[in-house]
Amino acid sequence: MVEYNVVLSDKVILVTGAAGFIGANLVKRLLDDFPTTKVVGVDSITDYYDVRLKYERLEQLGGYGERFIFLKENIANKEAMMALFEKYRPQVVVNLAAQAGVRYSITNPDAYIESNLIGFYNILEACRHYDVEHLVYASSSSVYGSNKKVPYSTDDKVDNPVSLYAATKKSNELMAHSYSKLYNIPSTGLRFFTVYGPCGRPDMAYFGFTNKLVGGQTIEIFNYGNCKRDFTYVDDIVEGVVRVMQHAPEKQTGEDGLPVPPYKVYNIGNNSPENLLDFVQILQEELIAAGVLPVDYDFEAHKRLVPMQPGDVPVTYADTSALEEDFGFKPHTSLRNGLRAFAQWYKEFYGNEN
Image (cartoon, rainbow, N blue to C red; front, side, top):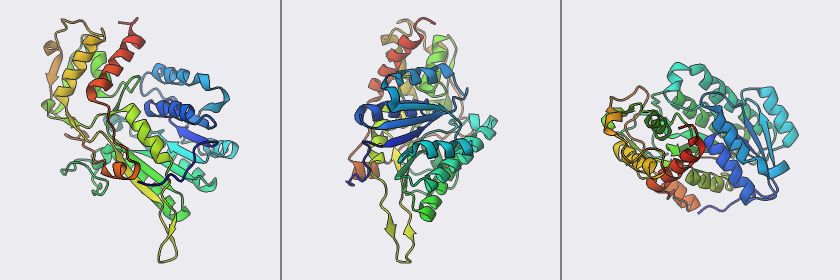
């Protein structure tokens, strides 16, 4: 186990992507757990998906008074980011702002270059000039591409991305490494594995499937159902992030007298991949139990098995041993409990519309 060397109490923490799914949950957790901490949240509120969800998440953060400051800004705007760092002087930065999604990167590549490359570069530059104690940033399981070896380990070579999204996330890791080396900035990258939960992203399978089933449409199950995903409940992700934030990689000097990059990358996943057909079965059962769908809903009439999509991979499976060894943490929420929480939230949020 590592020793915590970053105190989060009495600090200013910057969370980018604060209206996003993981970001909003993280902000709430930080404000709840560290009552003397101030969080600055940044988000550009793009319309990549229904912005009502982003405003719903922000509304949940409205009860913290001056301890939560929200700024609608794009991290790709360097002038705005430098002004933010100059004004608030965050000591810890969590960069979750990014254009997400594999398929969207095929049709809208510009969005990925702007947010994931230029935006991340701006964050690195600001961290460099304002002496940040620890930069934690979101990478993705997508960097493993069509890696045949499972489970995916952070020791694996990840030089063959199969989507532009994956390429930008791998680029983030490389950029962070170079800044850690050149400027001794402690940075930790987190490769997230298929995050899900209440008020999540509608482009994710569980949410999209639910919307389609409610609308009487047919859901398409890729690779004829022969996909496995390491589904990770959002609370487990947030727990991992909060622990990682509190230990910055140690600054060290190498034999050549130059800094050894204070740099780490971890997987955060469930370490237990679920078959897509089993996942759909559990989702169906929980949607009925929550009253989102009627008991006699004909699922077979609304399911179609189809081939693999470009940019997708057949399996994601995290080797989380490094996270367990260093932080004593392993995600534990079962798929059924996680999907139950989602189904109940869905009923509450969309209840009057359906």
